[in-house]
Every structure is written in structure tokens, then in C-alpha cells.
Image (tube, rainbow, N blue to C red; front, side, top):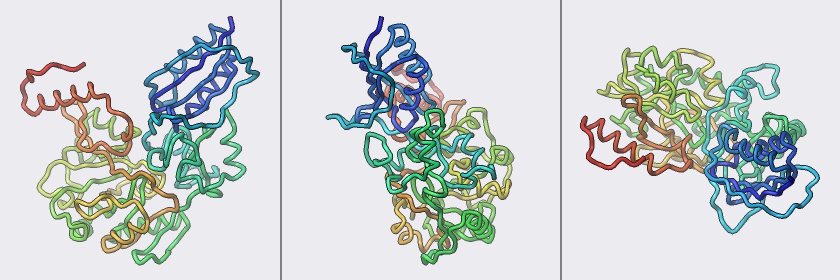
Length: 420
């Protein structure tokens, strides 16, 4: 028996490839109708045989895209409209703005493979992205999540990107931040006096590596703001960064290119390894086992915070030297907010950094790197930010983590009710 269901899906369902997923799912199940983004989430009008509709709805719950979080599905039966096909409808605004924006994530394996493939048209393009990875929260200006509501609005897609964007079988189908060297943002290398040095990615990465090894400090525009980077093995460079940043004692975070390099000088448990390699790419606090960096990275401490690359440019930089270890600290003076606007960065960081790596796409929502530590293979946040924000926190679960953390610290069971 044929039916028509009006379906509302709430959660993290925009900017994660949800509409393309629904489109393909509808074709597989011979469902007619349409799907659209609105300010409450995703709305689906679906007509088909009752058995096919049931299979369709089950798949929405169980097979949603990897970055999606389906929190609620509301289904209402309506009058048959006799749709002839299935399509993606133009987004619309409703009276409520309740949908969640997805967080920024690490570049995925497919994009990384293309990034290092000399035959690919996005070879070494530092803004390579697809449905399953890259910037989201940091570039969104408003919902519903469409290109016009992001920092990518000013970049018109070239014919090749447009073709991928419109192809339901392509990994970049309806990927709002999609771009290429022809039509997308570009990277720039400047001296701290705003003198342009280069716009060529190959030249930029080689010069940046050379400057770092020579002991210079470089401000690098990342996903949620600027980092201040220097060679973590160069004591003079680390001390210079401490003096300029006015940070005499607080430890610096590090970044290196490979998990194997981290395991050479820091103790890494299975859970810590999992977090380091996760799509969120946080800083993880690890115990030092063999000294390979300057003693001024974390003065008088045996624990060091470290992370792996998550932007294409970071991957490219570390591909030049598998032993490279960098200080990668927030781009600010101590106790000030991270710099994320370009003019502000030159003004506030110009006396700290010798060079600047920046790009011509706006960061809308700034964020620091998240920081996590692990006790008995349980993870706890020191700072919850990039990669996790603005994903909602499940409060009941969060309280349980607090109790577990206190028990670990006090080494005694708490006489408090468990919230499950």
C-alpha cells in the first residue's frame, strides 16, 4: 500500500552529507518526494510502498553519514501527492532555529590520498575537502547550512567543481566548502611587516620549513585561528617564543607528523593512540619517556601535550621531514583570545612572529585546539573546543564522567547516585 510520510530529522544533519545520503537512499528504495534543509534540521517528504518506507526510515537511523548524529526522527502520515521523482529542494527558514552545526574535522583518508596524488587536480591544494571532512563550524555564518551562508559564498565554483557538486554519485555532491586551485581560496606567505613573499604552495611550504629550522617563529592560520610555531628541538627558538609571547612557565603544545614519532619519546596507551588519530585531532597530554625536545617546552614537567596534523598544509609541512617536531601554540599573548582575523593577527602577533602563513577565506567562528587527558583508558576534557564544539553535550553522561574523574583523583568510590 502506498503512503506519504512527512519526516523531520533533528541533530547534526547539516554539513555532513545528509541530503545526498537521503537522495541516494530514496533512489535505492524507489521513494518519491524531496529532501531539504531548514533551520530546524532536515525535512523529507517521502512517498512509496509501506514496506519500502519502513526500510527507508530504518536506514536513516542506522546508516547515516559518519559525521551525522541523528537525535530525533518525527514521522507524520499525510495525503498522497503523487510525486514523480525524488530531488533535493531549496533550503528554507522556519520560525525556529534549532538545528546543530557540525564541528570541524581532520582531512579524511580519501582527500589525503588525492592531496598527495600528482595526477589529481587538487594535488597539494591546501583547501581540499569533501562531504566527510574539513571545516564546518569555523566557516558557517547562519543556518540552514548552504554555501551562501558560509565563508565560501564569495568563491564561485568552476565548471569541474560544479559538476562534482551536482553529481549524486560523487563524494562532493552538495559539499558546501568544495573548491579547487582554480576557484577556491589560496595560501600566502608574508613577512611580519606584511611584505608578500610567495603565493605558490610549493615555495611556501619549503620556505616555511627552512625558516622553522633556522629558528624563526611563524604564525600559521589554521582552521579556528592562528598558531605560533617554532622548532621544538631548538632551545633558542622556544625561549624566544616564551619571551615574545610572555609565557614564562606554562607548557607549550606540540605537533608532529606521525604517530610513530610520538611513540618514540612519549608513552602512548591504546586509548591515547585512538584519540590522537581520531577525526577531532585534539591535543593529548602524554608522559615523556625519552627527551627529544627542548626542556623549555614544558619546564619541570614530565607530561607534554601533543597532536597530529589535521589541515592539508600541516600534512604537507610534516611530509618534508618525518622527524620534525614543532611547538604549535595558540596565536595570542598569554591570557588573550586566539587571533583569527587577519588584520588583527598582524597587529597583535607582528612582534611575536617573524613570518605569517595566511589565506583569503574568513574564519567565522574561532576555536582553540581541544585538550584531553586519559586516566585508566577513560578520557577527560581539559578544554573542549575544535573538533567537538558545537556538538551538544549529553548532560547525564557528562555527570557520570565527572564522578568517575573524582573517584580516580580521590581513589575512593563516591557516595553519589550514578546518572546512567
